[in-house]
Image 1 (cartoon, rainbow, N blue to C red):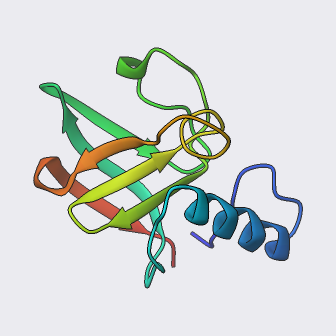
Image 2 (cartoon, rainbow, N blue to C red):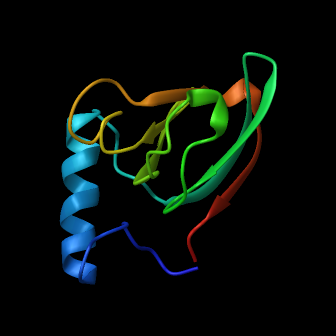
Length: 103
């Protein structure tokens, strides 16, 4: 899967949006960009991927815009959780069972 950011109309716009979100959530430079993530959240199996809604456990249908590898955690960003306001969703690396990267 080639890198993209939902709603970006060009590769350059996708890069700009990704960089802006990364700065907003204090994410380090990303050697690889995460496309899909599977983890345990409060005892429930969760999976998210760029361009798809968050898992039902989060009680919102917001689209995942970016997932950042931030050391011990992944930061999952949607328009209201990390991209524009509020904090992103955190998935502890110890709870992660699978990570898929953009090619």
